[in-house]
Length: 318
Ligand code: UDP
Ligand code: MG
Picture 1 (spheres, protein in one colour):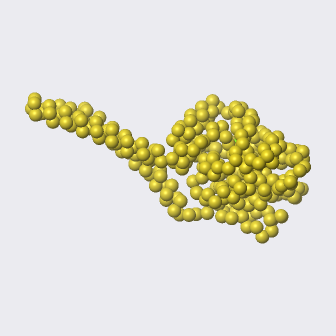
Picture 2: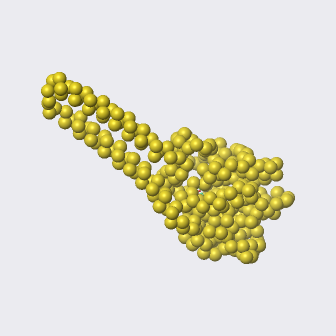
Picture 3: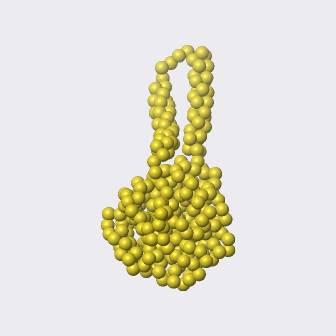
């Protein structure tokens, strides 16, 4: 027996909220041993998502909501939900039903067996372009190489977290969040289960390419300093090469006298070095930007309103 919170971050999901609720309702009806709470975190939707959630709450008091003051992104919406929940475990699931709620039973089973973090691994993706699949596969391969801890490819946020994990994640208040890395960083007993991703039932993906790029860069820069170190090594190699060329030139001049040839190689050298310097400056800037954002110590999100039932006096943390 325990209280399990189903945490659903939702941004402009009016097309799927009701379907989502129906599926949750069906699945949880078969899992009578536990009590459930359906917590929708409205991430500043511009459509009727919040109204629909409130309507559902009128019909079913297991439904709860946290309404953020604007769109803060999925990462912030998830931590807002974790701050709010008082359950013994939480299951994080997308609103679009790409992840089948039918897995709850299996997740809860492993939780009862003593696992703290039961995560679902996507076997294959349906309804996604080959480009997205390919880039995501390559990206995880790279991330695994440059960061010290394990990054599990094909693992999303669909998972059951025990209270221990929730408390740990709540302590990590970094602004530029990359939760996928945080899950493995906190440790605890992990269990992997598999599922086949479904196409979205309705609505559109909320990710733009620029958003994915940002998430990808955040993933690398928050978990590794390899991009910073690589440039000092490249710098040493290039300087060494430059020194050898210089030595050869000096010897040649001493033996054969001076000449003024060699402008093309001079230009090539200047451009090459200039490029390397700009890249390394950009990388330092990337890390410096993160330091700047973290030192401002801003809250991760603000709350417009939240449902009180069952949570009287329990302010979600910041
Ligand atoms: N989401 C959110 N805030 C955002 C973007 C997305 O809360 O700024 C939610 C969205 O409502 C959904 C989940 O995060 O429940 C995953 O989003 P989506 O399905 O668009 O991403 P994809 O499955 O394409 O990676
Ligand atoms: Mg989706």
